[in-house]
Image (spheres, rainbow over the protein chains, first blue to last red):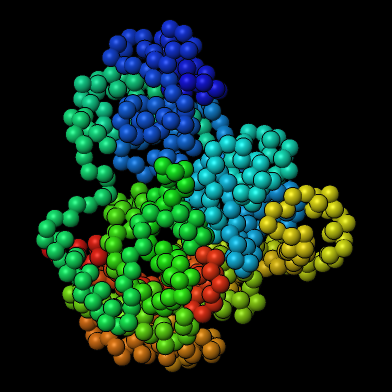
Length: 220
Length: 381
């Protein structure tokens, strides 16, 4: 389960609503238990690490952002999404351009700007923490000629520093983008995400009963 | 992935090659390389790991989600090659610095691609060639002949070649007065041309991309000075690699560049007409759309020459829907398929690729590769 932030609070509250009571000795403790399920241990991790932990079989269930899961594990045969709309942890992956690009208001404009860059033997560079998700979604919109620059933080500064021309980042209000002279495109929401409950495909048979009970409660 | 018994298993989608398959693969590889070397190609072997930037620049990022990219122990962003082309071109120009220009090179080895949904093998063995320094028909034919010969040497009995030309399709759309955005949209969607709802989906995407003007009124025009005055504050902000002039010119042109619903339908009819053309119709040029440009005439000569090389066991089809990776093909494109439709190889022309990779070279570039993993599977071992 997520160890901190709004996703952590939402996850505990979600589990409690489903009748799954998380027992944790202190806020700093990174392991916990579930009341009435003595064979289940909870590990608290950064939400970004949870998809791969479950996919690699280190954990058997997880709660994380759907965006994080699809970025790291879409199409994986090791894990799957049990429920993708847990009704908390809302976020949007949005494409934003420098506000001075007055000619660019939609994804269609990006298609043309890509072509303009291509003709000048340059590449349009997009900085994002979600290269796989951004690539897949941009391809669906017909934007194929973009070089993705993977960055882990401070994306809003990328065009100013010069390592990317545009960004695709998670935003709720768009305020940070605006303060850094970036403007989301009108149709620039690449992905709408919520918290998701994910499961490994390789749960040992000795845990089958407990895991069945947990999934039943989650789906209620 | 460790299973519940803690056995370490082979990674998903990677294949083991046993002795008989490996023997067959090496036999084909050696035959092809020997033929190519005897035909004047120099055999080279670039590293499997290269700077990630090389492959990103090559494909303009379009293959970045299928390329294995990671930070190495020296903190550099590196990629396992998803194909040979970019590495080989880099190698050729690195050698040029030593005053040793190789215009024709051949190679063989594994490439790595991540394809999660299709369960395709992620490590693919290839043998192939790159040909630099010639534009036009003659080099197109030489490349196609070389790839046909390699396929024959591999022992594949029956195969077919799909041959298209991205350059001709783009040229036709642009010549009819449709802009680059429309041309890019159509070309990017040609892969789904045979889908039942292709036309409907294309119009939907054109609308979604604001390429269609919803009323048929004339567009108003704006002067450069008006725009500069109206948007002075925003245009003085950081614009990155774009100039104020680029932005203003495009802004002014944007208003005038949208097309009407009638025009997009006209464009779709044009594209359908070309896509449904058989090789005979294209050669006869008796279609309602006359294809008389220099590139069409050259392409006709090429098709006739390729037909002459092939016999009935190795058929040739004209396929204008074939685009492979649009990000860099600009002329002929071809796929070689087994009787069952499995793609055994392919290639085409990508003249702009060296300059995109940062080399000052504008004299033509083309190449092909044969997928030995698929070829051995089709032949049986």
